[in-house]
Length: 148
Image (cartoon, rainbow, N blue to C red; front, side):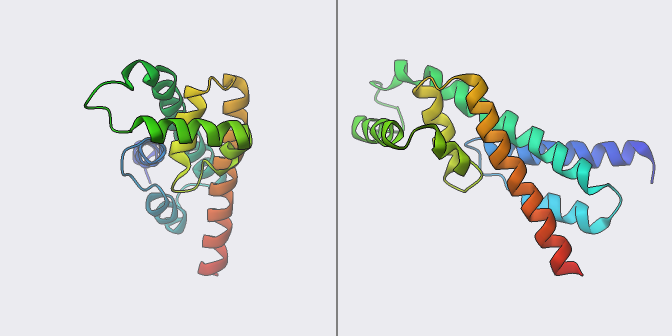
């Protein structure tokens, strides 16, 4: 397979993983598993590219969260005062460790709240990277086990 085709496939995986980590309704697992089953790209590259894309998408959420406070009183704002206050209370209680669940379907909210709460960027990136890389590694293992 030509190198340009492999790069295009890796870019598609990166884009799917990036989008899946933002508030957009993307799914990266299908792309990841499809590329893994095709067997043209090493599993290490798949995990690396998907993880980088997913972490960078979470960083976008963090940045959105860090600037969201200035809009909270606008009529068009998608969350109520009560919802924002509840999210902040919840984050104060459970803290940065919620970022280890950033891989889960509801994890995007944690990454936005982490930005709102001004979590140190280095800690945010570390915990989110562990969570998201672990998820792709587990997905790769499950796919390999299921496909024999």
